[in-house]
Length: 269
Image 1 (cartoon, rainbow, N blue to C red):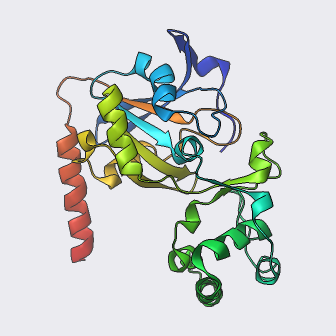
Image 2: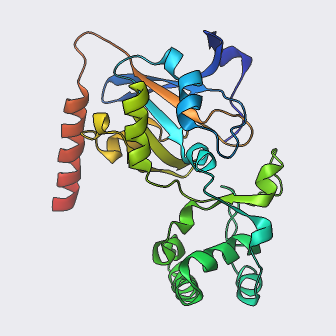
Image 3: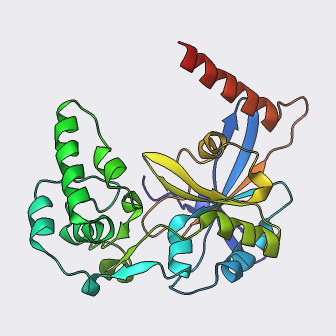
């Protein structure tokens, strides 16, 4: 996804800069999405203070805040320094056969593969590599991450081409207790939120606050299916989602019911 923070879409309110993304229409329910720009969020910052500063001035009851998992991991300091990853034989060897991708650093980066070995253990990683090699023959992808588990698909960092020097030398792990984090944000600030691992290829909901627990992950994923937060150095980790009020419109409950029915039809086929 290219850089999308243009002057044409730039807005400012109460000193907060945000960029208007294309509205999302789900079964005639329309949602605005504001990509809120922040400073570069460092390790050990308070996510409560950051959200209070950048999001609260724009938030209205009924809105949903989508939070990039990287922000929470940085605030929790759930990171690994490259200097603490001792590169071994298997990481050096297996990384030569790993596939690369354009979503970020993949297992062809030896340090990332070594970190995966450290987290999941060498036997599991070897088995995951073996299964991945076999299934790729049949065009099946993603098997390595499913078998490896341990949140390895969420490892981010060691980006030598990153605009931020810090990302050259650290890797971010999945945030700890994402649902609990969202509940804390709701309690402290009254903001309903979800923590997401999103890229141009898919969306995973890692956690959501109690106030939106009734909304399915499928529905929430569709709200940001085009990855409106973007990548690179846009510094827009928060997407504020606002329902556009219209007369005679369908409700979110109607959409959820239709989504559930359509999934049921697919299962019956």
